[in-house]
Length: 301
Image (tube, rainbow, N blue to C red; front, side, top):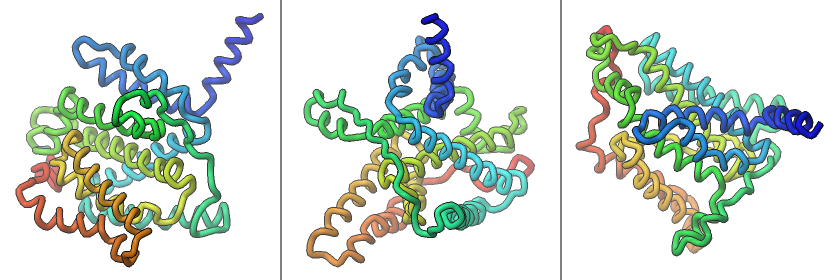
């Protein structure tokens, strides 16, 4: 009887969204790590098993929907830019404006409020096991489980791009899609995979803002952070490992402007600090950084 009860409890546990979220994450990470000599997919999934018990139900469901929503927007972007060859910048700006309008409409229809949603459950799980580490331990202990997810995304992203066959093909399509097509690669399929992965990561970033940082969805809550992210990607030479210090630089500027708002400085000028740094980086810091050679090119050109 106890066995049947435990089995029923296990099946019921599978119905929770956070379990499915980390099943998907575990499988993806397992596939990547399984390609590394000395590691297997089982080992990789075992490494991330503790995360499956660290995220409350409703925030996990929000993260999952954020990933799905980001992938849907990424798919639309892929259809426009890959299939119909629309300029990627125009397509991206248009979809950003569309997303802003759709979220505003949904807030009006559901909560009768165009500005923000009601406050939701926060991700209160902290990383207390980091506390014994000298110097950086107390800082890391104050972070939420989202911090680990982001660190894992950087590590997995670098491994996928530079240590797997898929990453090699993805970079080949980005540099020379015509040559990739000549070698028999499915260029359009690889491009669609790229935009779907990027959409999922962007959705996780948006879910972090609403579920972890603000505990609610606020209209235009990104406040231009997406364009700052573009500058970070360029400055980091499109390499996940190099993007991290660049992101820390911009994060430091953002923290400084928040701190200075309580001092005797005009708040309008202080709030401009991250964007001024972005303009300076784009004007003087990226002159010798070249984007992938295949940007804007297609396999039939």
